[in-house]
Amino acid sequence: MKLAMRIAYDGKAFYGFQRQPGVRTVEGELIRVLEKLRIIESPETNDFKGASRTDRGVSAFFNVVSFIPGERGDLARPDVLNYHLNDVWILGVSEVPDDFHPRFWAESKTYRYYLVDEGFDIPKISECSRIFEGVHDFSAFARLEPDKDPVREITSIKLLQRSGYYVIQITGKSFLWEMVRRIVNALRLCGLGLLEPREIESMLSGEYSKKIPPAPPEPLILWEISYPGLKFEVDGKTLKKVRRDIFNRYSEAFSRAALFGDLLLGL
Image (cartoon, rainbow, N blue to C red):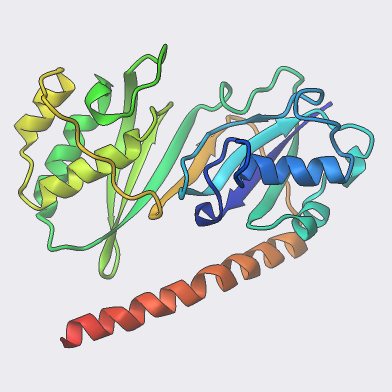
């Protein structure tokens, strides 16, 4: 039997998802608790895998890990794990086939970036968004890694308007390192009149002298990963606790943002 877990986490508390020596990571925190409770012996022995290796500062509302439970597999429950975890929450558990891999089985991933309104030209952002959709070589909009194919497909980019800010929602099968943040920054520059649609077309065609720098990581969240036919079961009591924890975590930040927003408007 293999288990898959849907997880959420506060990216500001970690140096990224993937475990690294000497720093605190999401993967490291999960493995620490799973080993302590003897749910797994080690990530290698129990085939521990993650769906998306988010960067330092990037949060998630829907990431997925999988593993083969060991001696105390009966403790692999949200109510038990959420008691021991810090800055990470288990939102659901599902039994999956033995050959399940959370990254390779994903049908699509959706990211959301929260962008403060700087007086954007919204039609221009929409025009630039459409250029990114489809299959392209995203070398100009990523930090490339050896042996990684720079060709990716973006199935949709949506601009969701909120009060005082926008949400840029980007969906695709897979993404390169810093790809989402660089696309977001390009759209921001388009909205400010500092980047033209034809320049994006040229960059996607391989004609560029320098790359668009990435937007800051903190406003980015991995919003959803789609797995056809896979459901993550979670009881109401656990969901209520997770919602309360997340609300307590972010309500102070929201209040301070509103306070300083009023101060700035009054200047």
